[in-house]
Image (tube, rainbow, N blue to C red):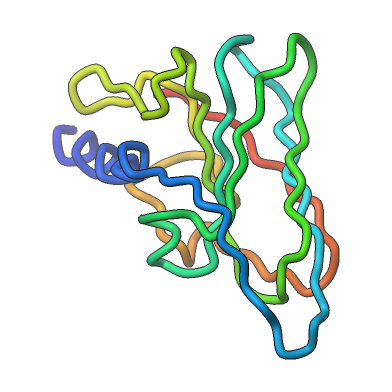
Length: 149
């Protein structure tokens, strides 16, 4: 059990370095797409939602390729839209910063704030870019749910 807890904690190392740069990338073709991330609901109606997209293992575990911070709505779900993305493989990672300190909080090695990854609905260890990645070659909408430990 301790090993699983440690593996899960590793998955959240991005929280302390979850840098939200707004870097851009050019494409050879000039064709870009829009990615809409739908978050269906929230158990906690406070704080901010920090959503980052990665386009490689490096940007999945470090500074995001692109990112946004949005306020958690008073009711319902939320949508976060990323425009101007070149075709490629992407993964979404997000956390709900309940207390506004801009980092994931822990109780020991367990995260105490909600988080989510594209293509991941249950954690059995830290997810990889490959597990979370999807192809973007047209405008796309994906749903990512928040989880809590």
